[in-house]
Length: 522
Image 1 (tube, rainbow, N blue to C red):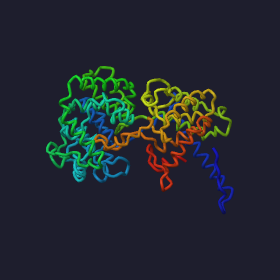
Image 2: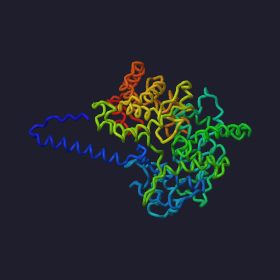
Image 3: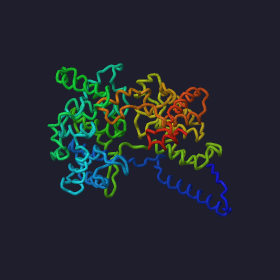
Image 4: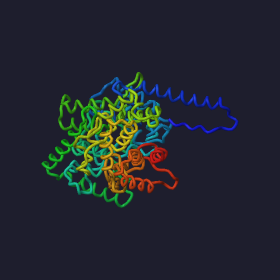
């Protein structure tokens, strides 16, 4: 590792040697601790904690399915209580402002688990929710959950017809026009909403006290969404669909439901779960039950096991992760070890340690070179070569992990890794969008008008190119230095220069936020 210590006025050689020894000692200690955490097969996987929406939804899912684990539920309740903020509700990040939707779900989860509404923490949460407009102003996904639990009428949520599965690729709204995470969440949700699923809710717990007005008397749940011509147009279409939905021939609906079922069951992904992300897994688990799959069916067993694998259970509490991050964790750990051992300055593979070899082998085993994958909808002739974020997710490799892993392999400098590196580079260059940038999973996923549909009030339906992912791809391809990638790099750098903001920073979508985006680009 290159260290340049500038001479300091009036500081003698003793202090300088002390600083060097302190730095060397810190590096050695950090390396030792990191290696202690390496799994026997060579990988790392650290906890991936999100906001309290995820553990709250885990409890809600258990009551929806009537698959309660009382011991686990009691630990998640301890966790949820501990995260309640001074403002009475739950934020989306540490120290954050009150978030209405997260607070509604956390309150409902606690009440389902047995916390009485008159307890002090429940009273504080209820008062905060009502002060912010009540549960009727929660976001669309929260209102869908409430509709599934019969807490709001179905007219409180947008029409989400499963017949979307029958629309042609050229249609303005089609599942491959939205991000990969959106489509894997939406397809099983189409089934739940079109068939008006109802939670078992064995204890028949309600949260009417969180509404300023009786839910059935509220006439317009979408008033806040009518901003701009596009949004108003989509709301009009949504209302029109609500009128005609009952006239859809039963045969058409059966075909659409079957199409959706075939689509998501093909991607169930065993015990690693649909797209490896909690919201998609929950919807798949619930949709399978609604479609009549028995609890002992392999699909139900897989979805249940995938959800349980996301749980982090400790002595006193427990929470649920949104997904798992072993590929990302392993490649970043490998980067750190390579840097600490000065591989690049010391002749490459001669300095590779046994621990690093195990990490490289583990990563290479998880390169996704097989078909099919959703990326091939836009790039049908593009062979695989990427890596996913999770242990297994073959339909959804992502460019961020792929660039980071391939960069680490290239830095290690082993000839036997060259084929993997070339496959990764070819896949990445084939995934460049028209504007020169790179998205996380898809190409040219820039149908921005879709962020105005009533379903998308979170404004995260799409996967457009971003500066942070583009920066990672540029770093890898620049390091690799293949002459045939020069035009790809030229267009990518031009995109990054256009994306720089007046402050000098770049926004990072996949980390927080300007610091992450800026260091990724630099």
